[in-house]
Length: 301
Image 1 (cartoon, helix red, strand yellow):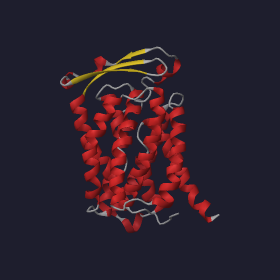
Image 2 (cartoon, rainbow, N blue to C red):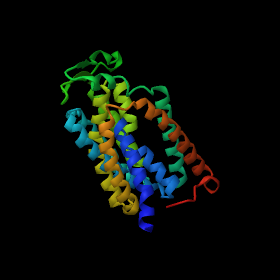
Image 3 (tube, rainbow, N blue to C red):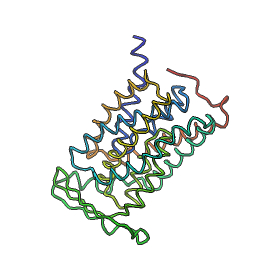
Image 4 (cartoon, rainbow, N blue to C red):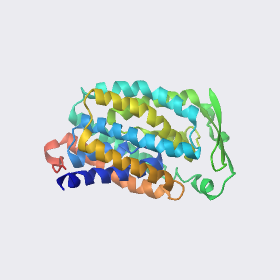
């Protein structure tokens, strides 16, 4: 019975972050890592490693679901993933030398950055969700959305989904590769996966259709997050039991639920709830880093 009580909080955390992560193409790490530190008393290095391992599980699960729907831009996903791999390998090694207080403060500011992104563009998941789910055999053309200052090394994409919908768009492939190079380091260092930054930027800067951006982000995440997680495993940064086992099971369940809800739930509602959650966790981590003896949560499972 004690084992069940120990498992339930991790399972709930896994299911909740799994659903959210797949719905917005974020992998869930932005919730997992701070939650493990704040509510479960996990050390920052272990929280980052365990979180990234869980993000890897969640993103692989989500990729399977999205590929079945034909929403993944395979070529772009590989470009993003291969660009992110170097940073995802280096970051866990740098993390070993980072202080606990500095890590928490930096993570807190990262969460506040996410809150700012949501606040400035909360509707980004709504742009095409109604059109894509209402009927099939539609064509969505976003080629004209590329700003003039990105008008170099452009590449065209043409994605046809299982529902018969066609997405045509154009974006700067070399600039997107550089962006993912930086994102690979950030995601592996903090254990977040980085999808919460990639998805809105793919939509607002690179002109990706929303559903394709979410699916492609999850696909690329499944590759480079797995590489980064393996480095964390090698360095001993992963809490295998109970965190990885039970949260991982929850993520698999939540990932499949999220992929089925993506066409029927309003993402803006999820993002508004997330805005409050990440702001609270971001402030809490900054306070814990600056004044650990006063603001550290002592209750662990």
